[in-house]
Length: 219
Image 1 (spheres, rainbow, N blue to C red):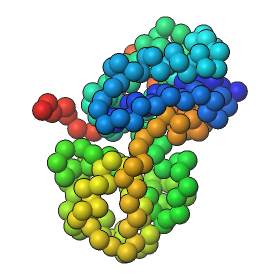
Image 2 (cartoon, helix red, strand yellow; image 1 turned 45 degrees about the vertical axis):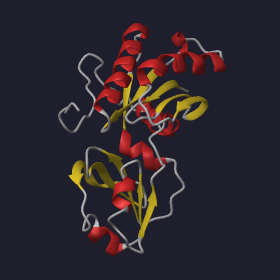
Image 3 (cartoon, one colour; image 1 turned 90 degrees about the vertical axis):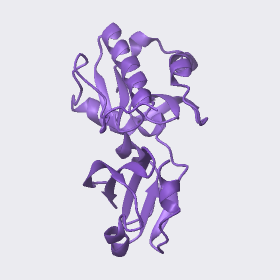
Image 4 (spheres, rainbow, N blue to C red; image 1 turned 135 degrees about the vertical axis):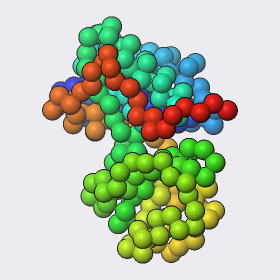
């Protein structure tokens, strides 16, 4: 039975969850539109542990959302996770951000496309089938009115995430379902983190870097 602290900072959502044996027992989150990670991440960690009366020394691992997503957000989350792993001498587990978005949600669809906002008409996306198996690689792509046309002809497709709003404006298809408010959350990371912990699928704390997918562009 593992006690794992999960950190999600890939978007504007600053989110911390504590899981035991894959089930979340405490949770703290700020879904405000501005980035609050630098101010709120560490206080949220302390609050979540205090709620459960669990000391940092009782943690078995730290799980962090690995990206893609916000360069600054990912950097803050991974830095915090690596710092805790160093101090506590416990494993670091990375959780693919797009995968965690679709795992726990009750979605009835032939395909699921998590979609996070990048820049202008660009998004980070991946494609999963009805059994949550990833069937197309994660990539950055510029949206247009023919994006995902082949998928939409095959069956019902749910698009979810903060990149959906701009796609919804240019695509009108009967098989398309849009969930623009479905954001990455630490509460969705617990199952994946537990599974990876059991098989010792962990990262090298010294060398692990977030999956930025694109180079950082300021402005």
